[in-house]
Every structure is written in C-alpha cells, then in structure tokens.
Length: 405
Image (tube, rainbow, N blue to C red):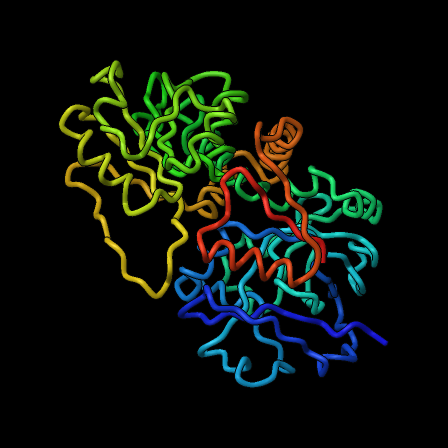
C-alpha cells in the first residue's frame, strides 16, 4: 500500500499555528503531463527564513507557489484562511517526461513542506544542470524561485549519510547567494563595477560595518566572504551586534573583528572608528528595530552612514510590536536579491555568474561555520516540532535544523 502523503498547512494570519494534514484522497497520482517533473521533497530545513516567507507571503505571492491540493479536507481547503509555505532543500525526481532530468535525479530549489509529490512543467535553463519552472501560475514569482539545480542519483548516498554538506546546502546555500550578490555585485571590490549603486555608495574601503542578526546564516555568509574571499576594497572592521543569547556563538565563529551586545552604547562600540569614513549598518533581522536605534544614535557622530535593510526578525504575527522608523538623514538601501541577481547576470553573463557563485559557495561549504551544529531530524512530526520551537523562540543561533522526509 502506498504511503499516505502528509503536508503542512498554516493559518496565513497566524502562521505560528500549523497542522499536519494527511491526504489519502490524493492517491493514486494522476498521469504526468508533457515536459514535466514529479518531485518529492527529501531534505528541507526550518529557519527564520521560512517565517519571513509567511510574513510577506501576500505581498510577494509566496503563499501561491505551492497551492493547497484539491484533495485537502475541510477546513484546510479554504485558501482564504490557510496556505502552504515553502523551504529550500532537495527533492527526488520520482517521475519525468522531461528529457533533461531523468527519473531518480535530485533537484535543489524552492520546495513544498510535505511528502505529497509536486508536479510542474519545466524548460531547460541556459546553464548546465539547471531548469526553469514554466507553470503559468508560477510566472508571477520572482525568477530566483523558479530556477532549480539538478544533481545525479548518486547524491542519495550523501543524503542517507546525513552529511554536513547536504545540510549546509539546505540551510545556507540560498543565504550565501544573497551574501555573494551583496559583496561581489552590490559592493564589489572595485566600487565602480557595482550593479546597483554609485561608486561612492558602493565603496567599502576602510568602512566600519555593523551587522545585526550576525548569527543568521546570511550574516555569517557575508562575514565569511568579506574575511576570506574579498581581494580588495576591504572594510576597516566588521562588527557584530548580537543578542546576549547568541553572542557566545557569534564570537566562536571567528568571523567578526569584534562582537558587542545590541544593548551597548553605539558610540562607545565604535570608539576609534574614523569619523570621516563610512559606517554601514547591515540589518539581517535585528529585534525590535534595534538597527534604526543605533543609526539614530550614531548619525550625529558619523555623517557617512548607510543602513542596508535585508531581513526580518521572527515575531508573533498576532502581536503589534514597536515599529521603529529610519532616522532622518540616514541613507537607507533595500537589498532585493532577485533584482541583484538579474543585474549580475546582465553584467557578466549567466554562465559566468553561476561559475563564480558556485566556486564561492564551495569554499564556504568546505569551511563551514565554526561552532555551528547541524541537527538532523526525520519525518514531518520532527518538522512540526521545529516549527513550534521557532514560534516559542526556543531555536538556538548555533544550530541548524535539517530534516530527511
């Protein structure tokens, strides 16, 4: 007897509330259409990124990437109230009518949370071992979410071994993509080559960088690239502003020049920083608008301040917390990874971009993050518990939660 598939369903307004819903009526699966793949999620992670997709799901259409299946029972079939959100990881190709991707292969990309196989039409990408989803309902998504990478069937050995490399691919690969676009194309070593900023805006030479949520995967990835992969145009100092709970881990990574508490006096924390040089505040999701508070206090002493808005904190969707606003006179730049990716490909070419990005990722994947623990779980019940841990604010900065379904 075939295994009954199970999917995660969330309350879209209060996405801390979830249900694991079995779908016996989804079987048997229908015939697969032309030029299509049928994939089943095999490896996924739960990170703060999942909750960002929920928080801004209506704005960016993320609730619509993997629709509620027709066989979903009431009340969870009401798409106005309930929805499915997405994850990054590996899926196995269990059927294929697309010559470029054989059955038994694995794909990495933006996947549904659950064991129900997903069908989509695809076309070959311009880069080897990549394909693009062509489903009409997916075309309103940003292109990065419709691009997938293909891996051979032999990857199953690494998956079954629960290797750290597979875990990092799920946990941090897309976070590295954002960091790489920031350090190599938004703020490249030669600032005149920035794809989105003026040379003056893009110049990090001798700048002091202050990172909020420095223990986040994207924060760690950016710090790693600045420390280990940047040949020129280096900042003077990269400072981590960490919560007390994450501070020991952030210090243990060795990726930052100094680690201070978010509750420290900002001016004292930057003592010794040249007043005529740039201060760049990078907010990957600091709590309670702390980055804006630091910017407001630093602005009188440091006239050259930039704030980069990149991520969001995990917060209770039913509570209206303090909404801090950007201080007057401070330059605020919003980091949009998909826009940067499109601009980077236009500048250097698609193949050249991905060759550089893959090389950078392999370097980070090999090094890893010092002090970071990979915790493997198995099955949808383990995924549910991990989701609840984030909702209860119990997830730790030094652990990565990865699951084999």
